[in-house]
Length: 219
Image 1: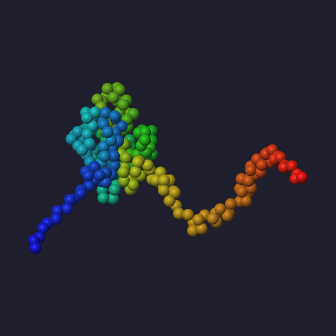
Image 2: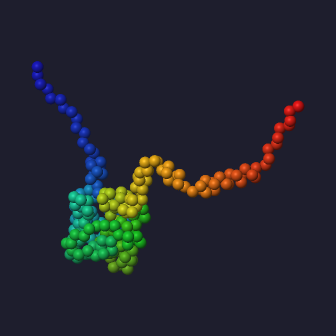
Image 3: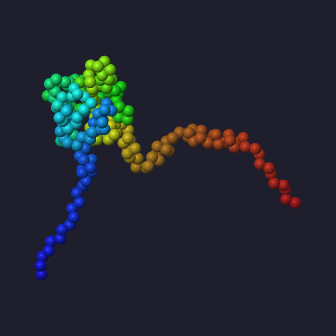
């Protein structure tokens, strides 16, 4: 008797599905000329002309302008790298080579994108927000601009879809378990006036109904 080798097909996960599983966030551009939202899958992402995320609409973007890093615990940090241009996180200028935790900020509400969480982090190159950048462009102070909303896909940072922690708690409220008696004790404690008030309109409606004709007596 001889030996033979049985080869079984190996099914690997499609690349798109692997990227979806690895994705921890999305950069959503405020300038339509920056193109589509950019998924963030790598633990380290560099924004710049020679980085992982580029912005051809902004000639003032440095070759390596901003570095985003996600640690093992899910926290995300932004580091300003440029020696000539500025970086703003949630409207505050970052110092060079200093990693700053990226977190939601309620002050971003006036500058948030439609459909995104009002407190979602804002990351801009050279200008604090889109309003300042558009004004500078209109005055011909700059030849382009770029900025992004950072939408977290990790519930440890922010709820999926960009909600804040408060929104997450509201969504989870329906998961609160009922008491052991199914809530019957709470229903029994309801004042009797509630049931009487509910029955009263029915009695009023019955009193307004026309009298029903009586059948003739039997002969």
